[in-house]
Picture 1 (cartoon, rainbow, N blue to C red):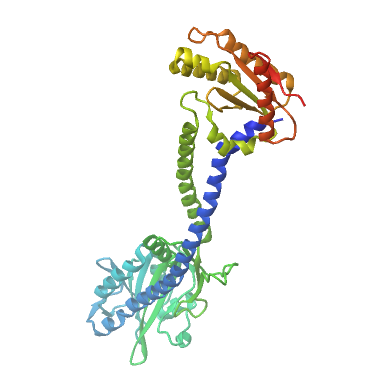
Picture 2 (cartoon, rainbow, N blue to C red; picture 1 turned 120 degrees about the vertical axis):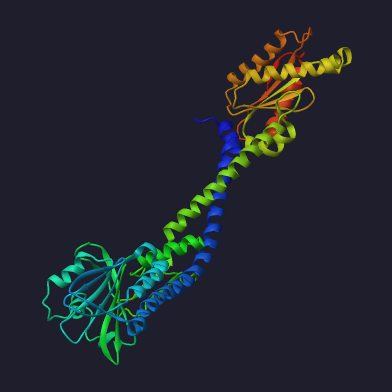
Length: 454
């Protein structure tokens, strides 16, 4: 069976600190989680508006090519692939070509400011009334070269790309939008997951070209990542609706991306896993410092709880923190015999030295888990967790003999000891019985151990 007093002392010390720290952790976790949830709920709405604004900004940038295309000069080009800076111009037969490299560079620059490294490519394909085809690419990829090599000159590149990407022609179902953001598809040559913005442009209601902006598929998710970094939020976005949805805290926002005919619905919500992990780390961090504070405070209290002269527990500290935990314990009361005479004949300094020495003997004679208290001037109390009368008497005799056999500063000092070990009685009753046994030891001539008997 485990030592009862050990459990009590542990409860009063280390276990109490662990318990308070655990409660502090739970309370801290709950409070931080609540306020961060409120914060991120507001950010869900804000992030949704940011996403819609950014996608509209991308659309507006793409539209800027149309007026430039209509007003720019033309240059005569022979068939083949021509390079103007970083832009490749692919011509299938000799004809007049619009000079739009400046506009494309400007569009690329502005788009990259919005999507960063998620920019994949930009193309402008010119349509003519003849079999002549022209396409501007930045950068030029194998799929673009294949566009020319796989077809005949009587095929129109715009129609071929529209058919390949399942874009409606002649764009009747674009609805109110003049462009379209496609669903995800895998580019056949690079195997990159892409989403494209198609923008057909007209002159006098006649289709004259198409702008094709390719973006990496996760550019919207990356916008959320940047938003989280800038706002210290925990937001996520997905095409599927989360299984959970709170009524009290509506941390879910459904947004419909403009100009996405097939499926433009996204769900913006709190990233609960990431939020919970961060809250756990914050709460753990604060709890760690709280535990250090509690341990330090406990050490200070423990030091202050000891009697300065003897190093034993002070009575007032015992009454406040230990007494209620020591019910049904055995008690040994030790009192120095004729202590008043020692003080009167040899002075208080010698008297203090005698008290210190007796206290030292008591400390060395008991177990680490026993509680020893300086009860009065020359009176000491030992609280133990067992009721074996033979063992209790043996321990009391050990203390009495050690004091008697040791000359303390040249003086023969003795102690009288009273013991009580009744079952199922309160500490107050047990102490009273031990004190009666001590009184009997004094009456019988001192320097002896007396066990209380009913």
